[in-house]
Amino acid sequence: MKKRIAYISLYFFTVLLIFILQKPLFMLYNGSIEKGFGLADYMQVMVHGASLDAATAGYLTALPFLLVLVSIWLKKFPLKKILWGYYILVATLVSIIFVVDMALYTFWGFKLDASVFLYVDSPKEALASVSTDFIALRVLIILLLIVLYARLLLKITPSVLEAARRRWAGTAVMLLIGGVLFIMIRGGVTESTSNIGQVYFSNEPFLNHSAVNPDFSLLSSMGKSQDFAAEFNFFEEEKRAELFDGLYPATDGDSIVQVLNTRRPNILIILMESYGARFIGPLGGIPEVAPHFNRLSEEGVFFTNCYANSFRTDRGTVCTFSGYLGLPTASVMKIPAKSRTLPSIAEELVKSDYKTDFLYGGDINFTNMKSYLLSKGYQHLTADKDFSLAEQTSNAWGVNDDITFEYLYNQLKDRKEAPWHTAFLTLSSHEPFEVPYHRLDEKIPNAFAFTDDCLGKFIDKLKQTPVWENLLVVCLPDHGFYYPRVGLNTAPEFYHIPMLWLGGAVKQPMKIDKIMNQTDLAATLLGQLGMDHSSFTFSRNVLGSDYTYPFAFYSFNNGFSFRDSTGVTVFDNNSESILLEEPAGSEQRINKGKAILQSVYDDLGRR
Image (cartoon, rainbow, N blue to C red; front, side, top):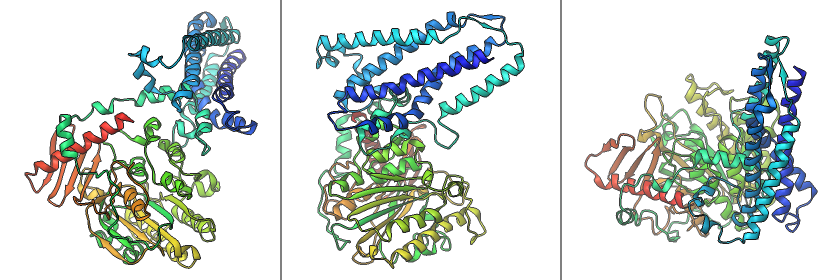
């Protein structure tokens, strides 16, 4: 058994070492010295990238592991003879991916992904920018690496494995090793699984990209690649353009209602987990759940007719901070090749010298959130690992809201640097709804009441600090919630959410009753600041002069809904049928909804 364990361990760590040593070579090739990066940067890239390298090495160890497991029960097992073909395949793929990724990064500026296959059908055009010598040299390097890797793997492989003397015990040991291998492949035992975002650690994109394993990047993007532009082609292009025209004005549009008393407030955006209108008294919700929010809604700018664009946190986060519509068949956050092309509120604020940071009490690697936030302008991230072990386990999802709100207060109360923007995603109002608070008898409303209690105490304390004078606090849910849980997330009530602007930067309390979406936060906020928001294709300044047709669009699993002053229509793409139409007979609503869905998929396909 020692021979088997030694081989599997040596094979895994050899492949892992190959991946780790590729990183400084990638950096050197792509001008790391000229860019001013030093030894510490190389070390950080290798350390932070090691987890994804280990996951990829685990995948490549799976077949040798299975063969070694089988060999326990066979008299003589010719391991090297069986694996030599696999080694050549592994060496070939690893070598090609490494060299192609290293070479293309110079031109592309991002890691190798499935978009490379778009050029397979047109190799002449794809290679037009490089010389024959350029190609020949890299082909030679690939061949040399194939030989080197294959010989190295063959050298560490036993020629023959004898049957184990204690087969059952040997099998048990190998299965234990297999469990460890599975955990490495998965990326740990937390909620998040291995993803590109887990290795991001810097605000410098080049360092993050250098840490990403190119093999993992390519394979994971292949699993998510789809021709978005080819989906939902309801209309010919001319008809689509006609229906879509004017729905999302391309101009900035002057703000005809100025609700702030300053153009450069400090900005805190609190993204409230699942906090739909069902729990907000002034919106017709259960009055006793959120007494603090109900009270605060009389003190700020209260947007009463706002609708979430999607139904999950990963989607709602992108909708909020990038002003991009939620998709019924995909999560843009999980596709870094696409999400990195989106605009963001933080990026625009950074252009005006804002310092930015993001707080979340959960696993920030979940659904590629970390890579999205860092690529979208958040300069510092705080997450579960920054809290004590007891705090990290206070909730099934991480750190409970009372702890994170207190952390946030301590971070902000004496903050001197300005201007700044902080975003905070709460988590306690999420299944399993276990919270250290017991005001309401019913479990679900009580969890929402807990978050409201945390929010109210936080705001009341913040009002007593100098920070409040120039502060804008935006409270907005990531998506809604249907309660009692007898409906589906196709119901319009699920998407109705509150949006509230508070703080000393607010001129005076008022209510805005226009129909709108959470995606409109970006253009509306930037419009109030006098900043350009033309890059936010699907975000509208609802306080602007060009917001003349109020409507809301939101999506669920392969379906969408369109709401305007005439009513609401819910459409299911699977059955190609209308699920709800109030009042009936509005062809305009369904056609505009289809045109929006077709347009956003066309837009994503171009990114």
